[in-house]
Image (cartoon, rainbow, N blue to C red; front, side, top):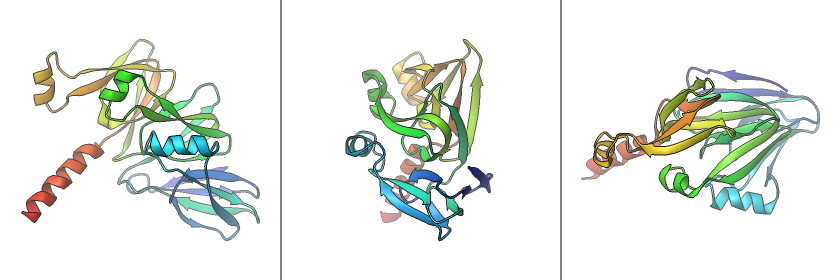
Length: 228
């Protein structure tokens, strides 16, 4: 499938050119414009149980959009509601891609999106909940972010510490653990960081340059000050 990410520096959208019979799967309400040869339908990828798992366990939409070029070749434009970037990730079938909440935007044919459970400590402490999305198969996955997406490439044995609010996606073969940002709990809390994720390479981690939770807190504070 031919595609191009337009305006990548700010407010990006993806332009896909589908041949007759080709399909692209996108998050609910992602379509911006499409050719009259394209049909858009709401589908529960993997059936009812997987759809319910995405909705009630990971907080994602119950339905995906399925855009199909049934009546000939056509064009689809899609984007996301966040003020941030879009990045394409090619999967060759040898590993899956873990994606944080609201990070999945779309994927080409051959990609299956499931909900996976994190272990107890990660679910309680990560801020992302017990469930994340996992995209697996052969094809292209489009991930979205709040802010620009920045890749961190780790060599074998190399480590990096990341604020969990800035995670977007990472290969499912990479291991990581939650830990305090500082040696003591008081320092971790007063520093404003709290808990962080320690990743060990090899692998590429995608992070977002802004933290949506911090933005929501600031917005709530400003709204409260305005109303009072």
